[in-house]
Image (cartoon, rainbow, N blue to C red; front, side, top):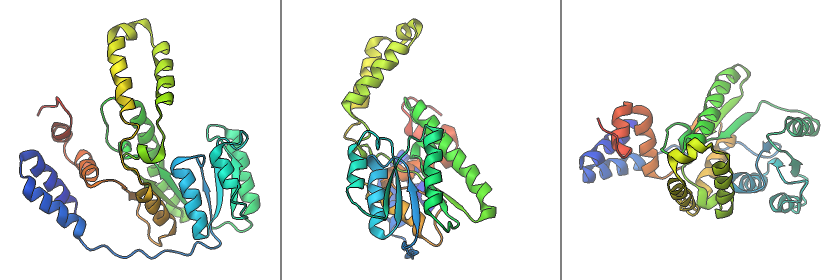
Length: 283
């Protein structure tokens, strides 16, 4: 299947679009094995970032399937909307915890609570969400890519270290779901942009110029409603990662275009991959 995808990408670049489309159609029409799911009853899952976005939706999804959910939220102590909604479910299987993942103390307290609640812990799974930009770079996204590459590298190392204990470590690598998660807002972009500009040195401000910076702020704002608007692809893959007897090591919930581009950028020689997709790149 990978060869089909790479062949299609090269044909698209060379003008063979008709044949490329047929190859991609064949790729996605190939029969796939039905995935059997393990029972969720009696299982527990700890989820971080449940205030909104993927984490919030996943907490409700897994609870509905029968999991006991430990939902870590940043704003429990501040009565945040997401935490309050989960608490209002008034279910013994939905346990909402105050957890700032940047606070060692709060993480330790959450782990201690889970340990005390689960009387017979079993071998588990670790599912981390990174991004397609955790395996391929993109112009003007260096900070984001660095963070996602780091999580991917950590997860790869952890996966290899955990084999001996039977613990699976799985990566979810979504494409753009900004519209679905609401992770970007005009107000948050303005606040971050203002802090970045004020924190930049005089030399950096002079070299780049306010006009250039303003254009990039506007570009970021254009992403607010971009990407897929339905989280189902991501939620389905995380659910499979937790319930399948033989989960994949990596899942790629994304559109066909981005899946093909990910394969090209991570498997072809760098010069060819950049030439295909990055403006200004030359062989």
